[in-house]
Image (cartoon, rainbow, N blue to C red; front, side, top):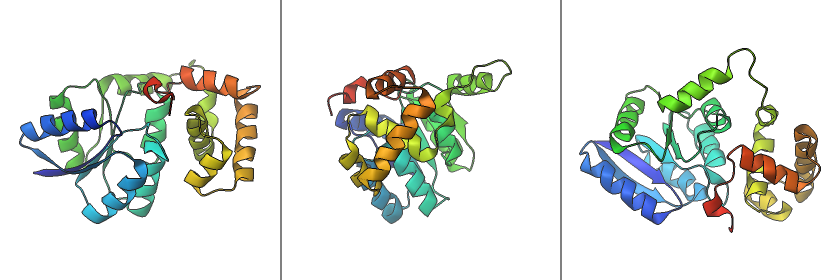
Length: 216
């Protein structure tokens, strides 16, 4: 039985995924949580075989949580489970060491297959995501300016796009408000944006904003 840690900030989503996975009789959800912060300690204490990680959550979110988990323990096996199909997210998460990438539209048999493959030491990327990644490498494709952002700049942009101010971002990332202000300025310059409204428009175009979180 494969032991899975499930991280998603929607209780109904977690309940549905847990039930479907356990019906397969190949997977057992040993714990679940609704935040990236809580996942850090749970991953360390429980040593799950596979972690299913949502991307957009309040707080540090799934991108930063995945990075911190893998920085502390590179043997952890993380599969991203999200609504995002844009190539920016898979590239970022695979670069930091995630072993799989699924959208929430996948069926349960594909999810179980991905968990099984990753548990055995392989990797799994949902076919349509893999196709987009492959096409992005072909000559002639336009460079995506978001891909040029550093890891920290990308993380700050994610938090800005979800309405966090400088003080809130500095608290989540353990950086000074002045440093966050510097990152904001860099983002405007690198993305050719004039203000935060422009940044938000770019974030929406890149799929960095889930409208379910737009009021948080």
